[in-house]
Length: 409
Image (cartoon, rainbow, N blue to C red; front, side, top):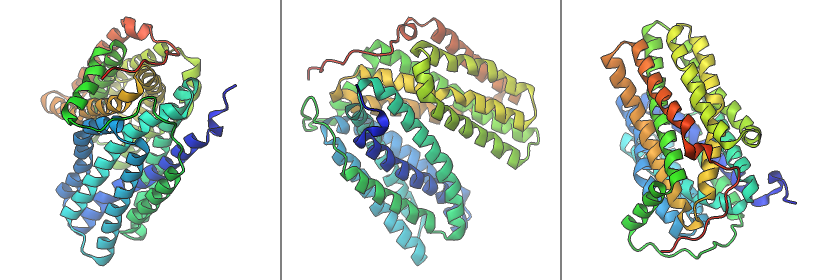
């Protein structure tokens, strides 16, 4: 009989290390623009620093996946934690000495973004080695809950810590990464089924990962549906915020709307392990599409920001379960020597959708009235819902997949 996931020593170490790291990372993310505004008052500089984190993640994401398949994954994770400690210590020292500059903060942001991109495929690929196949879905869901909790708690703490002292949120982030480094050093990762080889040509390694995503029907289809939905929802989110502003919603009302989306996601992440076991893979994925298809147009019918916030919470509730199903299916059918590249390719594709979505939303609000822009986004999601509902690939998803065979080099 397989022991409960909560008794899995190495999974607990990985989960706890990243719970600490994500708390600190989110505290820093909210403190960065506050620090720049306090120093220079430049909103453009604030946007530059946050954009640097996102751009670094996109640029490094694909090669990071190849590196995770060829390098020691535990070593990669430890190196990422150490690099973030060094970068953040330099920033804390500069802030305390009163010599912090925007270029310095951009450099630190680039290190943080790159380390995040390098860490994620190494962690994702390691996860499947730490937990039994039948517990992988629960582990993925628990990681999603960890991320949601870290976002809410870290973001709230970051503003409070900054009010106490400008350097404090960054100092706390240093401490959390030190704790993560120490915790990860005790992690015992089982030997790889196939010894990793040195990276000789990074380009072909990355192409191999993209080729795997494209050639495997299940991975290609589930990724395509996730990317399309993420694109239209990201556009819709910006459209609704702009529409609420034009309708005279107070800032606190808009803030609550955004918070309700996060609260719904956190509640959904906590429910995901249970729902993942209760619902079939097809139902868990298709349900998200149908919920959005029904609820998104309803936001165009109300001017009450609190009602829209409630709709946001309902929209986010089932997303973690669908994400758990998709990620679990993709990891289980991917050979160990390609799991890092799978994670890197997926991060790139979903990241691009997340980046292009707001741009699409901005274009829509410039071209058509806000209500019409909402309906355009709703139409895009509805079309995706039709294809997802009739998809033979999604209908054929199984609760368990056979272990993949190694792929010849």
